[in-house]
Image (cartoon, rainbow, N blue to C red):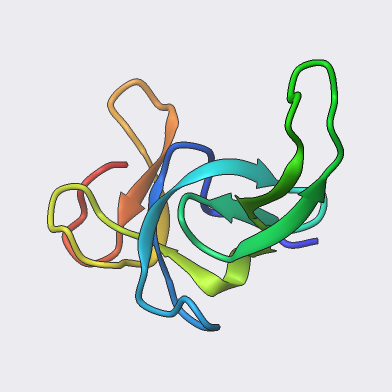
Length: 105
């Protein structure tokens, strides 16, 4: 499995599928599967059985996982979707950088 360039909390834009063009924050990253769960994207309906915590049950809507290759990181400084590069900062720590403007993520 290829290394993912996105992680939890990143703001991303969806590149393909029924939610193409939508932006959202990554709620959960699943690196072993190469998938991510993005806020407000890939909404599915799920039947929920009543439990002690959820007395009513019924049909709920929740986000489903989408492939990490279908999202692109949005640069916080230039505000555009951008590829991710890697560089070393002043302390020698590896950081992610925007390929368009060179800002750190």
